[in-house]
Length: 117
Image (cartoon, rainbow, N blue to C red; front, side):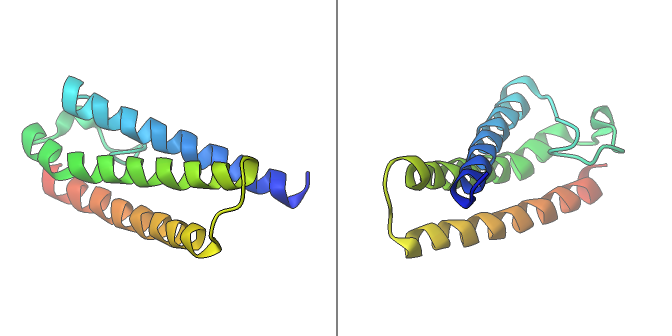
């Protein structure tokens, strides 16, 4: 496996995770379903949420933003890996944005757990 295929694999994983996070957003907003391991830690019981509507207002936009950024970041990487080169500053900006959004999302999940459980 050469360097390009490793980056291509990572971009596929990031892109797929972004799509899954958008699906998790759909489940939260449309079906009132909180996915363990994504929106709450594994040891937290989703059915014990004190205020589901408040939780949806708090985590809904954050989940959607995380899903969109992950999908765009993975898609941009896939484009660069398989279609053609893009400006390295743009690619680096998306990587940094993706990392910042991951950290922001993890902090939001922890805060939501304290507020709503």
